[in-house]
Length: 450
Image (cartoon, rainbow, N blue to C red):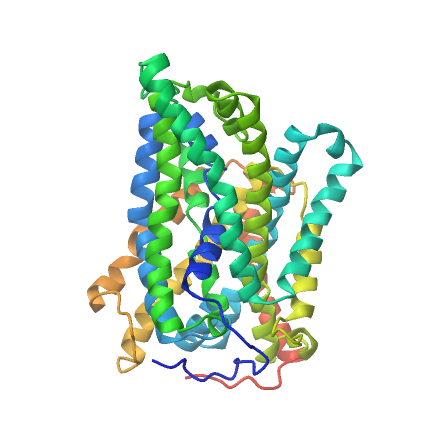
């Protein structure tokens, strides 16, 4: 089926992202390898951590993948989820969707330079001492800007290479763990590292964060080859790949008998040294820098399209919609990069709490758009359909409950000298105010939808 014509299609695009690069880019928008799940293991122990990593895809990722598969194949336009919500519920709610996502991105994108620096410091501590650490983080942002300015297909192709580089050390680590368990240890550690309710709650929050971001791939739909066919396939295949690359290394560590209580952010390097020696530790540490680079790069591609489409809809200055010869919104890329650079150095836990709340609110709007469009546009061509109307309604239940749970357990977190939940609500409440200001200052081409 040919790609649906759209006002957002750029005639400058010479080639489009294919299925495998789309899967790889989606993988980095969501996961970035086993890095980041260490706190799940340290907080919950092996059995509970495996349960979290197996159950969450069923309750959180799979419903989201089905929702995205239907909407991205039916409405394959630049801006993705913003377009879906706007079409289903009007310009106001479309703007709120974009605002929540961009606000979440400020906190989400600050995480990856932090992780990049953490692993770089383990490999070359002298390089990151003092002010040098900030320079490295800013250099990461600059490199990703230059990479993104070459176009979405280049980012997708690069994601394939980074995917292979990222996971190769873990293939060796898993093999070493199996050898260790079979020949040198013989005692599985399934029950080690069990924690109380606080540790389990933290593990669930980190698990939700490690499985979120599927919708980010939708914003580059007009830069993807055959989006009606490739988006559903990419979402489902990426869901399986992410779950496997989380669960297999964790199960291998249990088989090798390593103590789960010793796992926290960065502990994969310690496990590599224990099981294979300093040489694998060094490679795993370098892999952590690849994770930070790959995730930041892929997510920059996604988030930068939101200011662009807002500008095209008259909600931001038209300059922000300017594209270079590769079809990249270069002004939007640079503006986003500056915003993310200003958010560096928040604590990891606080970033996750705020990120989950804002992202969760935008995800709920997407599930609502899925249902509303079923009622409002039953004749809309849907190359992929996520089941019956009842199924479409049911898909959003579990993710919504998990979002409410995440907000509840984060109630004691603080940000800017106030509860994180209140901070998140203030950011969300700014959306309607900014929408009104945008209409007054920049609105030129908004067509009211009834």
